[in-house]
Amino acid sequence: MSYKAPVRELQFVLHELIDDSRLTACPAHAEYSAELADSILEEAARFAEEVLAPINVVGDREGARWTPEGVRMPDAFKQAYEKFVEGGWPQLRAPQEHGGQGAPMLLGTAVEELWGSANLSFKLCPMLTQGAVDALHRCGSAQQQALWLPKMVTGEWAGTMNLTEPQAGSDLGAIRTRAVPEGDHYRLYGQKIFITYGDHDYTPNIVHLVLARIEGAPEGTKGISLFIVPKVLVNEDGSLGRPNDVRCVSIEHKLGIHASPTCVLAYGDREGAIGYLVGEPNRGLEYMFIMMNGARLAVGLEGYAMGERAYQQALEWARNRIQGRPAGHASATAGTSLPIAYHSDVKRMLLTMKACTDASRALTLYTAYHLDVARHHPDADMRAAAQARGDLLIPIVKAWSTEVGIESTSLGIQVHGGMGYIEETGAAQLLRDARITAIYEGTTGIQAGDLIGRKVGRDGGAAMRALIAEMSTEVEALPEADDGLRATKRAALEGIELLRTSTEALLGLLARGLEHAQAVAVPYLMLSGVVIGGWLMAKSQAIAASRHDADPGFYGAKLQIARFYASQVLPQALALARTVQSGAEGVVAADPARL
Image (cartoon, rainbow, N blue to C red; front, side, top):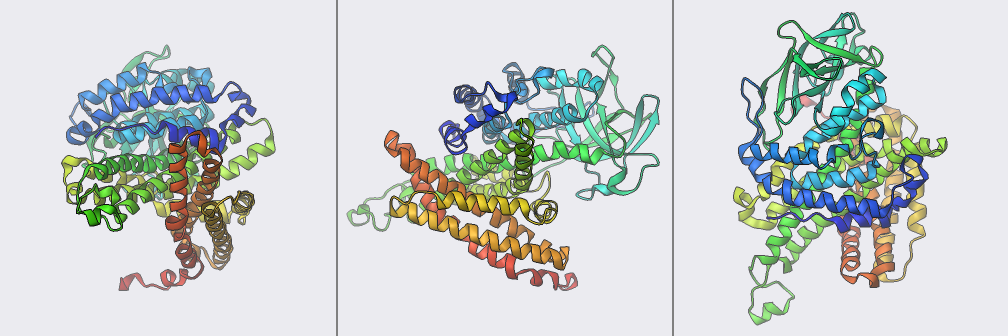
C-alpha cells in the first residue's frame, strides 16, 4: 500500500498542542516559524512518500548482503541515499558552524517520524550519523570537529556508535576492547557486535565512535574511553588515505529490518586500528550517553512511526474488505454486507492503533521541545528545569512508545485477519520491523531501570512530582462544555492521581531495596506513559472542541480519538498502579530455580 505522511497531525502537535512559537525565545531558534516548519514537513513528506516508502518492501526482500570486500546495499537504497544527501536532509538538525541548518530537535524529530514510517531500515543510517555528529560537536576537540564534522554533516561520510561486545551487552563495564597509546593516536584491538550500519557502500568512509579501555585504566565503567576510529584513514587535508584495520566479519540474519546491516566488527586483526581519543580518558561512557540519549528518543519515535504505517494499512483494508453484517447497523436487517470497519471489534482495534499513535507522538514531540529549551534557552533556571523534564521523559518515550508500536503493528495483522499473516499484504513486515525497537538502544527493562533509578530515585521524585503537579493543574483548568469533555477530564485526573500514589509507593520500594523497585519498574514506566498520554490527549480534545467549526472533519476526528483514549486506554492505569503498589513481592520472593 502507499504511505501518506500525516503532516496535518504533526502540525497539530507542533503548533496547537505544544505551541512551537515559544522556541523563538531561544536565540538559536529566533528565526523559527510555523511557516518554515510546515514547508520542511511538506518537502519531507514528498521524499518519504515518493522515494523511501516505495522501496521499503525491496529492502525487506533483498536485504543487506555481506561480501569479503564489504557490505553491499540494495541498489534502490543506494540511489535513495544519494537523493537524501542531495536534498540536504542530513544537515537539517546539524550545527550551523559545521555546515548544518541548525533546526530545532522538535522539528527534526517530527521529520524523522516520516523516515521511520516510510522505511525504517533506511532511517537508521542517518540517525546514527546524526548522533555521532552531536557527540563530536559537544565533546570533540576543535581540530577533530574541523576534520570530521563537515563531511558527516553533509552525509558524505556516515557515522556509527560501537558499544556492545559478545560478553558486554547491557553491562558496558565488561568491555574488553583495548586501546594502546602510540604517539598522537591509539591502536585498538577487539570485537564489537550488533553495530547498526557498521558497514555499507553508501559512503566512502564511516566514522566509528568506539568505546574501549586504555591499557592500565580502572576496571568497570570508570575506565572506559571514547575513540574516533574511521573505516578509512583521513589525511590532514581531509582527503582519504589508506584503509584502517577495521573490518566487518559478518552481518546478522534478523527477524526484520533486513536492509539495515547489523554488523560484527573486528578491530586490530593486523597492526591495530588507529583511533583518536575524544575528550578526556576514562570519560567515554559519559560522552557516549549524549549519543545514546538522542538515539533513545529517535528509537522511541520509531515505535509510533511504525504504528502510524500499520494503522494506515489496516484502515485501508478495513474500509475495503466487505464481510458480514455489523450488529446494530441497518445492514444487519437489510441483509447487506459492509466493510469490516463497521464491525465493533475492528473499530476498537483501529481506534486503539490511532489513539496510541497520537498519544506517543505527542509525548515524544513534547520531550523534544524540552530538550531544545534545555540546550538553547537564555535563562539558566529554564534550561535546568527543561533538562530535568527531558531526562525524565526519555526512557518513557523510548520504552512506552515502542511497546505500543509493537501492539499496533500486531493489531494491524489482526485487522487483516488471515491475510495479515501472509507476507504479500505487507502487514507482517511492519510487525517484524517494529519488534526490534523495544530492544535496541536499551530494552524496555533497561529503560524502566533508568527511570526508577537515575530519574525518579536520584532526585527523590522531584522531577516526576513537578510533572504530576503541572499535569493536574492543566487538566483541572480544562473546560467542561459537554459530557465528552467532562468524562475525559475526569479520566485524566484519575490517572494522574494513580501516577502520584504509585510514585510515592515506588519511592517507598526504593527505600526498602532496589530489587523491590525493579520488580515493578516496567509497570511503573508503562503507567507513566499511559497517564502522560492521557493528559496530552485531554488537552488535545479541549483544543479540538474550541476549534471544531474551523475544520469539522479534522477536529471531529480529534474529539473522537481523545474520547476513546480516555475510555479504553487510560483505564489500563488502574491495573498498572495496582501492580506497582502491591506486586513487587511476587517477583522478589520468586526462586529462579523453580521457574
